[in-house]
Image (tube, rainbow over the protein chains, first blue to last red):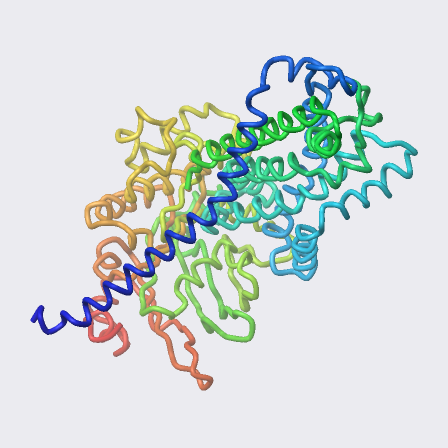
Length: 284
Length: 273
């Protein structure tokens, strides 16, 4: 019997081999830019990574040494403000669309708008924060930067938490209601604890996205050569520092831009690892 | 829980007064009728079994007894369902309170993604239980015949248990809020024969304190555990859909040995279904 099928079998194997090679080849090509960027940044930025990077301010042109203290902490501060605004909003939105508004017109509209928002170019988010915060308060500030970032973070948080809520079997909600819990108790004490890993993932994913954003910060948080000066003052961030220093003619500033790139990548890597760790503890 | 004073005085009345009563109950999903015109009485401390082929609406009817159907979009109940003489669907009735007094065990074991201890304690906590929680947890698990198997791992997730254990955990969770009735929707369909047997033994013990209504596909199970049996069937409607109706409701012995309806005889003797 086996010989009978041999010709077809050989053809099938040949086709399988060609397709496998094609897929592996495409994967390798897709990996080239990633590896090239990482290597480049590591070689050019990794060399100067020392404690001074986190403790010293960037020096004026033509002065050697210095660090990125203001930009590093500025990034953390704008990210924190962004999270404070977007995480509660995103979680509550997801709870509404999945738990309470499921199937209603309002929920459909909210979900559609969230999807549109996730496709909005980040510079538009910056313009929004410029119009809403910078123009009304009359100054560039860390808060304005945080607002701009939160616009980008909200859809990510909403989507991830929505996915989490949808993954909780309906039977779990019925069980909770079956022992006499009302809707609020069901959501707050059964469903939310179960989606904590998803919330953590949503937060870290949105942080990873926002950590690298430059455009929304350019005319909101602006930049500052000095250390942190309050939430309502302009603040330096790593991404804007990279933008400013990368095009500067001074070698030391160019080097600092590479260091900043390296630090941003490390930051995102760190956040992603944390996110992976949190999702691994999923109960379902 | 405890019987109301007027009823404790006359045991005769207790036996004749139904605890749950369905009068002319029809259930609709949108414009489709799932079950039509059911009259049924469920008595205290008895196990009532609902049997019948798939799609005859027995689970649907069961869910109406504690208003779980409220949660299914488009579901509508017509007719009267009373519990101790009170209309369950009256405007002033709080469905949350109904579900606390009429508990439910579902087809698929569905423990909360919490520890075994908290699976039990959750219901009691939200209902404002003031007593000793450890004691309640132990008592409920003991009554559900699960205590000995889990007493050393109360902090582990309820989901770490086997299917049969999970279902007993769900039963323990249901009795921890001290309901008067426990509705069971095919509680053994996802379990192996040994776990099934354990749950059936458990039901016999539980009926001393609770009233049980069980939906089952397994006729042997109905004949083994129940006191009364309701046989449902589904009829083809003109639109080509299925519509469930109650064929016969009687003592289990009669249903299985001497049914009045031919349909029932054919079904219990395995000729269709």
